Length: 193
Image (cartoon, rainbow, N blue to C red; front, side, top):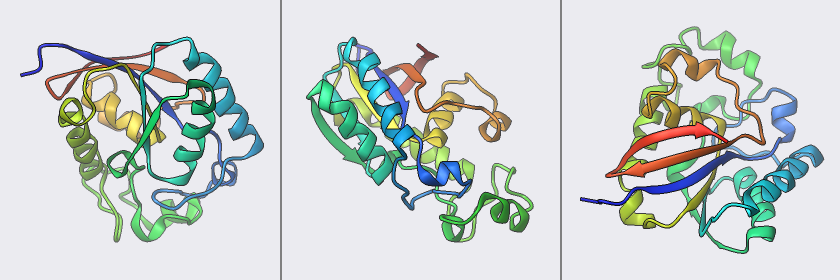
């Protein structure tokens, strides 16, 4: 058992072209806009004041791009993880959000699995697994996780900070920073700075 709590920070990637045009990203990628690069720079300033020892980023381009901009200030090791990718909407990744909503009437049901993709429940399970093995994989030094809005909301649900139905409505900006504590494979606290 891990007696020590591991503490770190969580942020979302900067704004992307598809964020602006309301296209569902999922596992597909869209590059950061100029504003998105600015988001990452602002995050790097905020985060450089904290005692971060390592960066764990989603392996999807927009998160990697954000992590690299942040790391130009932090100068830490960056490791990539497919476990903290955004939820995949399967064949709706890369399609306009309005089409996804129109063609998937039950999309707000937690057990609704997108064709070729995940359901929110499967996705939260994946994020749970990442948290569950976090200490053995990443040790107990202060960390930064660079990920996606869905993964942050999944963590908030796991931490019992938001209800399941808020998964679809909770807003998290491109410059919000969460502070998270993990112990024995569980999130023991999650708040925003």
